[in-house]
Amino acid sequence: MDPLLELLHQNSKLSSAELGKLLNLSAAQVEAKIASYEEAGVILAYQAVIDAERTDPDAVTAYIEVRITPERGGGFDRLAERIARFDEVKSCWLMSGGYDLAIIVEGNHLREIARFVSDKLSTVEGVISTATRFRLKTYKQNGVLLTPPVAIDRLPVTP
Amino acid sequence: MVVCRSSMQNLWPSRQAASDPQRFIADHVLDIPKSGIRDFFEVVQTMTDVISLGIGEPDFVTPWRIREAAIFAMEKGKTGYTSNLGLPRLRSAIIQYLSSRFDVFYDAHREVLVSVGVSEALDLALRAILNPGDEVIFHEPSYVSYNPSITLAGGRAISVQTEAQHDFRLLPHTLEAKITPRTKALLLSFPTNPTGGIMTGEDLQPIADLCIQHDLLVLSDEIYSELVYNGTKHVSIASLPGMKERTVLLNGCSKSFAMTGFRVGYACAPAAIIEAMMKIHQYAIMCASVLSQEAAIEALEHCSKEVAAMRSDYERRRNFIVTRFNEMGLSCHSPKGAFYVFPYVGSTGLTSKQFSFGLLESQKVAVVPGDAFGGSGEGFVRCCFATSFEKLREATDRIEAFLRSRPAGTPIAPSSPVAPTTN
Image 1 (tube, rainbow over the protein chains, first blue to last red):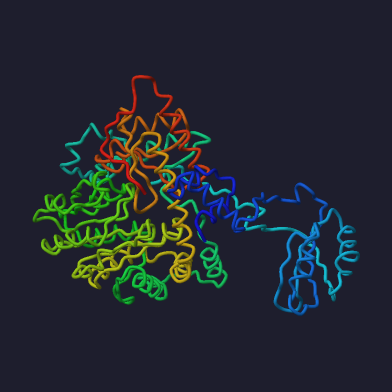
Image 2: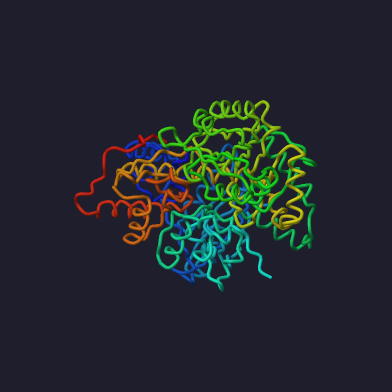
């Protein structure tokens, strides 16, 4: 991966000037590269990684396995894209193995997710079955550990 | 009964009062000066909220798979002594690693010794080869231990200067000027702490030629060998023709794999030299910690990816800090290896110590005065960039504020011995 993308992936708040200094590029060069990545759809969005257990302790996240019927010509794409459009669906992947789609659904409480599954998801034409599992606790999200490692006391000056 | 040696009589009473326990300490140990870093360290330790660029170790925690290997070894009850030379499997891992990374080939049974960090391996090598008065040439600015280690082993430490204008490389004519009939060995340490200097194969060849011509042994401390930037690769002097048989290659896991506290180093050398080093090692140390040795196997066999990731992170931080220093008017060459920058601060009109203490007092940033690494380090400070980007950003902002806050009439002189370099 382009080191610029790696850096942005770790911390998208770095300024163009800082990124330039890290990569031996000018700020203008960095901005041009970022613009081209955005235009090409390589960079899709810039988001903060938030510990939702602190901001919304009652919020519920479900991991739902969905079996769907593939269609002639389009395979799974049309149905998957249709399901992915729901605001409640935060992520949606086509999987290998015993089911077809894995989706992550977020809601304010259990009933909200139950309603989404029964009213929306299961009723989509082509959905064969769903299996819903609720998240109990998050340990790591987007590569970030939720309990940061204990700061290690290093000697302030060593040879 | 009181035994009074003549040298002690000479010192009496200026050095030792009758009840002073110092009188029991050997003369040659008393004569070793305190490390230049110690005074500074003691001041830093009394302060809070200091951003330290004075640390000589990776800021990364040891990769998890290495730590996990140590835990696994402990769970399995691998807690006994190992062979004096080190675990056979570790020695095999070492020779495999060295041959694939640096094109040097050793026999795992007779030419490798595992030590407690490279420091021990260096000490063993010096003690194994030096007769009293033998001279060892080392290049300065250098790691603080070389000079006293040579002296403690009974040798005479002869320094040869390296300079910023030559990217702190060792030049053959400066080396040759120091060679005498008493010269036994040349101690090389590239990439260099504190300068970040490296030597390419072309740079090393004339040095190797001199060593062959004058029949010198080379002690080559290559602890930073994995931390070489700009897409280049470290060259070991042992890989040059005719050099393996006159080189003690010293390396370890501390810097490459962020394993400083594990204390795993190793020496590779002709069997007779390893045998001599082993004699001292077996009586003084016995063996390196078995848990650390088990962890080192994991590191050497499976962690090239982790090393590459750390290296590219260091390289970016280096780019950042070099640009920042030059931007604020402190000329700073871009180190090609290790994780230190060595900016020139003499242009501020301050000595290394004045700059470091002034910066610490006013802005709470710790950098190490360059003279701690030998006289030729005067005018420079060492800043370690194995520190998080956020801290580097804050530290360089504070250094800039320190420069701006200096009273009028002390401008930064335009002249300096270092031409700003690109990375």
